[in-house]
Length: 321
Image: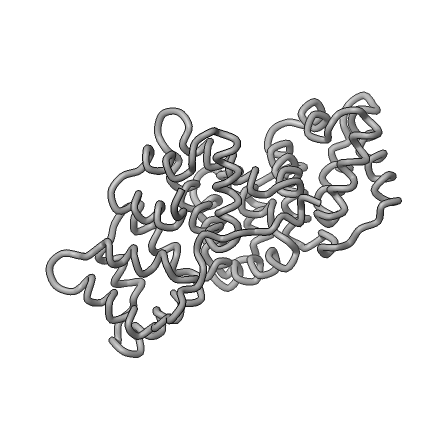
């Protein structure tokens, strides 16, 4: 099953890791006049998140300073966003992205979908707990105040952990569930959105893969084709993101990266978020998928879109073509 693709990261723990040596090298890179940005990139993009967190601790205990504060005072702009993002535990980083998507006027629904759609229950629970700690406000409450209708109900179901655990599979039930989806959409006038979002938020990804196969046998068209006819707006975007993550998460992220760089201007926030957050999960798979889909490497695309230290940091995380 494609859900079992083997995730390959581009950033792995450094061998012969020495937190003290790294802490001192980073201090030297920032001390005095000017900053050695290349040294910062070389160290921090070649360490795992767990190792970076050790460097933060070491920096404080040996040098009596806060590494993140020092980095923020020495760096700027998008380059700072990449480096500071690397220094946060993954769930904390994603919480910050969710908060940013909902803070102020308007809501960035695409970011909410991108962050929440691929997560398992265990990952969602970490994010929910972390969010409340960071912002002293339940994530569910914040989401409910920023979204509405079926989209809100879907996101709420995802974050309350309604999804069955990975590995939960029932082939007979999948036939019935495919039938339910058909009868809620193609098989009737109008669409019963509730059936779609309840099923897609509740079944394990393994189960959904079987449901989608059964749907194709029953209907003659794919679940994506059916949803395109039956749904629209944010609910369609969110449900199709879940479908893509079930079938091949790297495909979903490759598409998001391409969209971030396509046309005039660059959606740097999305570019940074995906490269930073997937670098230790499956960025190699995303790269491979990107090249297959767009006939060019992710590395070359980023080189064309970005510049300076920001470009060098992203390219170091992506790794060789």
